[in-house]
Image (cartoon, rainbow, N blue to C red; front, side):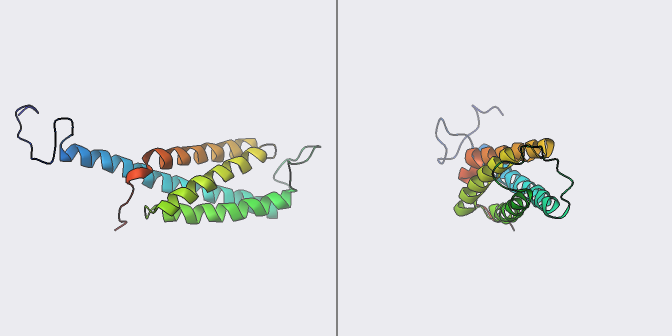
Amino acid sequence: MSEHTQHRSGATGPGTPPPSERAVARSRRVGWIWFAGAITVLAGLFTVVEGLVALFHRGYYVVGPSGLLVFTLTGWGWLHLVVGILVVVTGLALFTGSMWARVVTVALAGFNALAQLAFLSAYPVWGVVVLALDVLVIWAVVVHGDESTYEIW
């Protein structure tokens, strides 16, 4: 049967898609939030590794004669470690669909992106990858976060 000959229930109007199409669209948006949660956890773990390497394997990063922006390598290591742990926890909280998790995820992803930008002189490729993941997370949460109230189970 074509769409024009199907009888619709009173719940849908002339411009409203059928319930099955709305469910598919909602499922896609919720899927983006799950994707954002997984990428947030991944970016946080990358940042934790970056911080641990800065703290325990100091010769790994190449620091030019002008040094690093703002902090020493130890300072950057601690900053990356703490921010990375917070990002992982917030990414896990994003799976609950709560509003606070979305707000904190966007804030921490933005802060992490700025930290990666400032740390680019020490490790440009890794920093660009994590920065790109942070931007992707911010986009997914801001654009698709409106209908992410769902249950994990």
